[in-house]
Structures are given as C-alpha cells and as structure tokens.
Image (tube, rainbow, N blue to C red; front, side, top):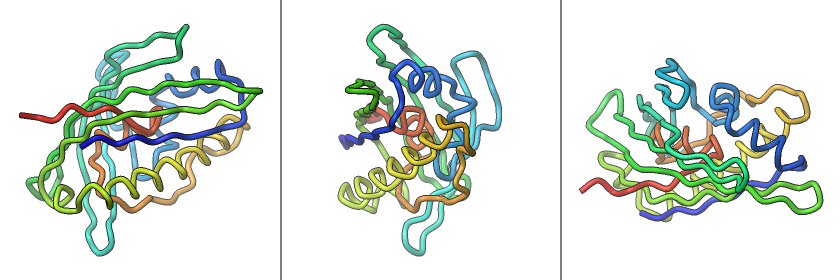
Length: 181
C-alpha cells in the first residue's frame, strides 16, 4: 500500500536534516514511539503504541538507516514490526526527502506499507488518514524540538500503523515500505 505524507517546519534545511538524522533524538517526536535499544550506528529497536477507535495495538520493531545522501537531503529507512499481543506484522522501507524555501523546510515521505493482522483490516483510507494525523503531530513536535523545546507532546496519535512504519515515518515521520511477498 503506497502512502505519501509531508511535514513543514520553520527552520533551515541543514538544521532539520541534522535533527532528523539523529534517530535517537528525533524518535521522541514520533507519537507513541520509543527507542529501546541501539543495535549499531544505523539500526535500532523500539516500541510503538497506536490506537484506532476501540482498537489499541503495540508493535515491537526494528528500524535501519539503509542509505543517506547528506548533499541531496534524502534518506531511506527500512523497518519491520510485530504486534506484541497478536499476529499482526508490518514491513517496508521509507524514503525521506527534505527541501527548503525561504527558511521553511518541507519533508516528504513516500511509503509502500505491508500490514497483516488487525491493522490490515482497517483499509488504506483509514491508514492514510492516520498517517496524516501522525505526521501533523510529528511536525509540531519537531518544530518544538528545533526551537529548543520538548519534542514530545505526550499524546499518541490513533492509527493503524505498525511500529516500524511509525518510527521510520517520524524519522522523517515516514517511509517507503516494500510489500512482503
């Protein structure tokens, strides 16, 4: 399932890029996400809590930075997650691209998300709506972080997105996911 999201913050592109590429720091800006272990300089484990209406899910996952072009401000993340209490899974990659216009930086995240379990039953429309909500909260948290404030709002955005996708998404907030065959 293809998903496209974007965010805009009032800050120079190099400052936004440095913050987005600091996975340990920026993870706090992702609604419901928490890094639990640094596996290497480019690979992390974490948890993501999501809620869609009456359904609450928690995913345990891993995210990895697989490519990074500092000059072009483009990065690709690969992630996968497993629902903690259930059979649901998510897997894919995320491509994040930053551009700047007059001191305002826009991040575009393209994803192709593969889900199974409860989240998969939600459908693309619900998942896309949730991705947009998550991106909005992420952008507000990132803006606060860039201004020297607290990155985490303490709120969790409801949605049918897996742990890996949320983390990758937030790290530029979201991702390009490759469907598992």
